[in-house]
Structures are given as structure tokens and as C-alpha cells.
Amino acid sequence: NDEYLIPSGNLIFHRTNRIKSGLYAVNIEKINEFEFVFNKRTDIYSAIKEIWHIRNLFCIFSKKNIVVDKISLYSNNDQSGTLFMNFVNNTIKRIRDPIIEHEEKRFIINYNNIKDSFGDILQKSKTCFENISPIISMYIDSKENKMPKLNKFLAFCQMIEGFSREYDDINSYQLMIKKEPKKAKNDTELKYRLNSLIKRVNYLFRYKTKKIADLSEKISKGRNYYIHHDKTKKFNELTNDELFNYGFFLEDILLANIYMEIGINKNVIKKSYFNKCFYYDKSRL
Image 1 (cartoon, one colour):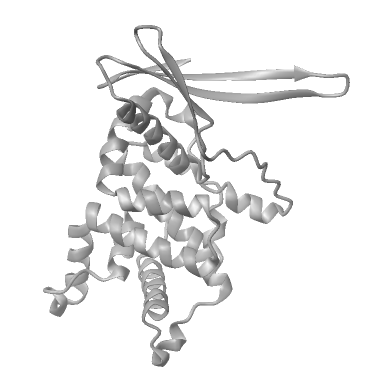
Image 2 (image 1 turned 90 degrees about the vertical axis):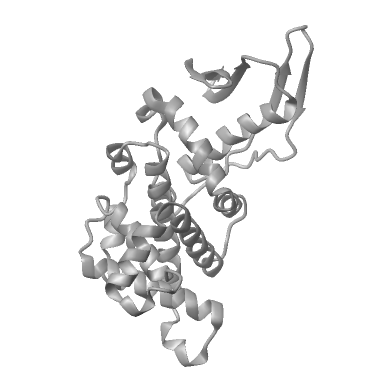
């Protein structure tokens, strides 16, 4: 059990295993439970909000839809109740294609690497998630419902833009007016927002400045073509491979920046980034 002191009380993370053995097999089922012990009278909605934040944080860590099986409530006068959540995903995803499996596991934060600072990460993530709540909702939705390539690409372009407005607006704006001073009165364009966010986490990719600029411009022009559908700009249309790869690329740029904002060490983020060669494929990027 790992215990953390939080402003509202104590958080205890129980990690246990249920083992079932038979004549020909042994099954081990992991059980993860979070116990909140509040230090003052708390209404049910506030309690559920704390639990739901943990769930959203683990979705961000795992790039998967994390579901809550049930919530048990206990009071000081020995009263208790159980809330069964309305969505429990019991489907086991079996991945047979090793390439797809590699992509699914490309960017995962391991709890053991952050458990010493998890209490601080939990508090910083609450502030961050409140500041970018529409982005968190969009990201969780992208995990709950499998998106087609084009939808995913456009959704992550929008998430990148929103995150930039909240946490990198000045840097991206200065980058734009340095390159194009005449645009000083304009809103910052997506290509500069993306360029700046890539630079913030470029310790993962080690891209040269020109490659970052070329990538940002190509992605931005592709997004603009699909949004505005200007037939004279059809040459900016992306291929199926580009849509697929850029969707994953944008997701990782977004997550790496969120991880930094909530206090995860750069070395941990770098350690969690498995598939560097995926972005060095010159035929795709």
C-alpha cells in the first residue's frame, strides 16, 4: 500500500493480486483500489470527483480508457453504500499484429517511476486538468471511442491548439512575430503553436530546427485543408500513412507537455518513450 497526504485528507493506493489455481493453470488477477479518507465532512459529489480525477490521470498515463468498477462509500456512523458504475469494460483487447501493439505501448508512464512524487503530481494535475478541462474531456473521449484516422488527426490538432493557448501562448506568439513581424496583431497560427510545443519536448526526438518547422507547417496546412476544404489547396491533403502517423505524433506531443506541466521528471518521460525510431522514418515525416 502507498499512502499520500493530500489537502482533503489521505489517499491510500492498494495494489493486490487475487490468485486462482487449478490443475492446469494459475490465474493472477490484479486489483487496484484507491481509498480516500477525508479529514472533514464531504458530500458524495466531491468524493466522486476525487475518484474521477484519479481515473482521468491514469488514462493520461496509460493512453487507454480506464474504467471504474464500483465505488464504496463509508461514513463515521457505520453507514455504507456502493455505487456500481454504468460502464464497465470487461473486453480483453487481444492484439495480434506486433507493429500495432508496439504503437499502442509507445508512451506509458510507469507508476513505480513516479510513486515517490505521486502526491505532488496528483495536486498539480488537478490544477492543470481544470485549466484544460475541454482538452482532457476530448482526450478521454478519443480513448473511449476508437476514432478514424482523419477524426483523430483533427481532434489532436484542436487539443494541441487549446493546450498551447493555456500554457505556451507567449512563446508561440513570439516565435510567430520573429518569423513574420507583419502578423503581430494576428492570433498565433497552429504551425507556430505546434513548433513551440515540439521544441519544449525535443529532448525526446532531437529534431533539427528545420525539421520541426517543416513538420509543423505540413501538419498545419493539412489541418487547414480538411477544415476549410479549399480545392485550390488540395496539394496539402495528407496521405493515409501521414494521417495515421501524425495522429500518434500529435498525441505524444500533447502528453509529453502535459506530463511536464504536472511535475513528471524529464528522465521519467524519456524513459517512458519507447519507439523513437517511429518518428525518424524519413518516408513518413
